[in-house]
Amino acid sequence: MNVGFALVLLWSLSITNVVAELSLPQNLTLLTLNTQYILAWDWDQTTNRQRCYLHCRVHS
Image (cartoon, rainbow, N blue to C red; front, side, top):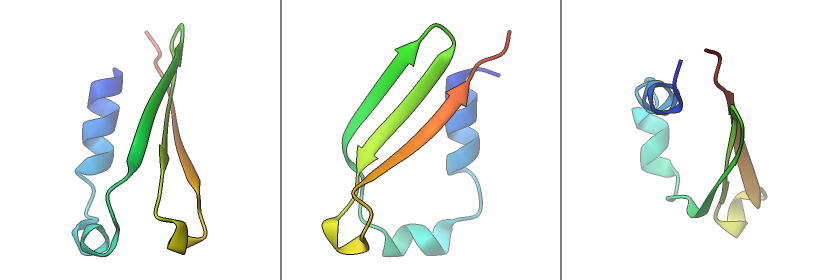
């Protein structure tokens, strides 16, 4: 599974009702090391969560 497919899969989930209520992520950062990928971003301060992470590992 490649990273692009994993990200598309996550976005294609049925979360359309939730997306309308969430603000867009800011300060996106992609950290990579060999086959490990971590996508980090900042959220609106009013949600009580300042940083979120998505960790993907690519298996060949």
